[in-house]
Image (cartoon, rainbow, N blue to C red; front, side, top):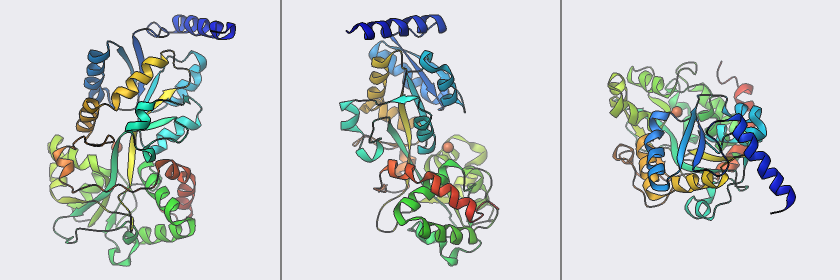
Length: 341
Ligand code: FE
């Protein structure tokens, strides 16, 4: 070890010891900052600890974790950041709080389209942005995203805000695939087909389809399963609808990621990488995908039966990094066409 590296390592140990009680460089611990609910992921961390002997310390929040990491700077105890959606993943990278994961295991298991070409993030599982179709009023089984702008759906579509990260990613995928001019035309067509001003969340979209306000709702795959299996109050919303997996014409269904990032100043970097690699293991993939009703990113791991009931997912082939690069353009177009007005 060079003199500078020894000093840097000593400084890292000193700062970690001073500023946190639990984070000691390369100890048997790993510190995870997560946007995912602790209830969902704690069983997973318990399994990791059992397998590895590494203790997992969790900081959970619904917002602001990148800002917190940024403010903590070189003294941040964070090793790993768990988050959902390419929007939030991208924001963490843009905030400069991550570093390349550099793992042959991850490179081998996670398909290239679900990894950052620069290595800063990797998908752990996937969710698709799909259609909750009225069981009574919609007879067709297939539909393309392009078709959603067809005037035949005038007044029949419900969707949450065009600026919400889930729609931003879908619209960014449209921009990345068809270009801004075509995407603008499509957004105008989609807006013209809306039954009401964009509002609520994906569950409320299902509610409105169930109530007859619209025939097609846009929502994520896991919400439908949660309503059907875990939320008696909302079960009827799922029961009134069925999930159609739309595709881009000639390609597949838009998917987004639940992803993992390695913190720039990870005091327990090696353990962080170990956890990330473990999350890609067969066991973890099964646990994680089942707990969240998501699609495992690792080939050969089975999907939850409710999710499998939607039909076989043929995921769109566009790399997620390409979609991320069109996020801003998609957001600008949403404002330009007055999508939410
Ligand atoms: Fe969600």
